Image 1 (cartoon, one colour):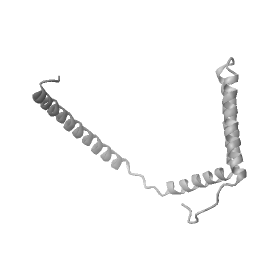
Image 2 (cartoon, helix red, strand yellow; image 1 turned 90 degrees about the vertical axis):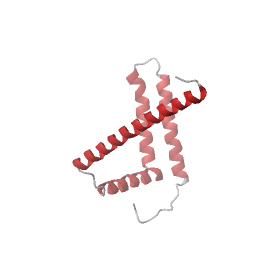
Image 3 (cartoon, helix red, strand yellow; image 1 turned 120 degrees about the horizontal axis):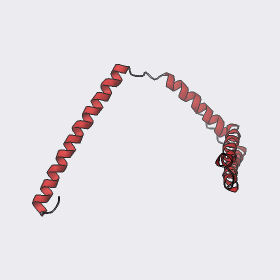
Length: 126
């Protein structure tokens, strides 16, 4: 992450851009319903176009630049990851499967014991 913490708040123009993006998407959805008698692919064109246009509007706002900075920071952090080897992954998967099997058998036996106790105490049950 960046060492510098930005205390910059979105201005009024950024809030207007965000509202415009929301209205653009709503217009695309309205276009979808207005073209109800058309083919499905033709009905989806306004929706896709409005999503692209709204993304462009947001990209030029404070929100868009913050999101882009987040993506860049995430890429830097992703490069720091040390991925396990194939052998480590296989061993870990085997341990998980064995644990799930043991836990499943335990809870099955617990269920049988509780069902037996319920029948013994109440005289009811399967």
